[in-house]
Image 1: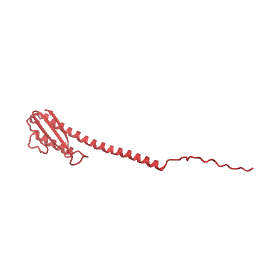
Image 2 (image 1 turned 90 degrees about the vertical axis):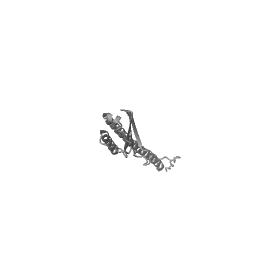
Image 3 (image 1 turned 180 degrees about the vertical axis):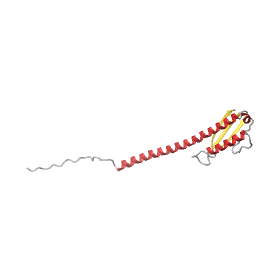
Image 4 (image 1 turned 90 degrees about the horizontal axis):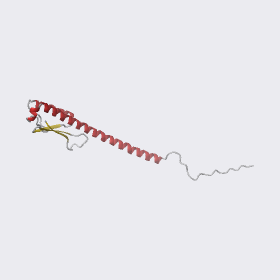
Length: 150
């Protein structure tokens, strides 16, 4: 008796084994876009964090001078603490010594840091300006103003 082999029926559809190269490339592109987005968010976060740190330093320096002015109230009310931007304090009073150390601290703590003080009718306005990092060089400087009564 001879055995006759019957041909096995061929499947009509092709079964896929594994992942195609196109799917791998699409997944790689999508993951790359996501990672680039995260990297840009990280850079923006660092820039904002640096800006916030400079602003905090400017506020702290303003309060430091205000405390000095309150401890030397007579000279502050007398206008001896009045000082414009880019002006160096002169004289040998306690007010000029306070202003000189304040200006030096601003210069050391802030990029292109400078400050001005205006006392009118026992109301003091302290303004601090500096060049914010990460912005164009020709951009307006960042500023913080503190206004209070002595």
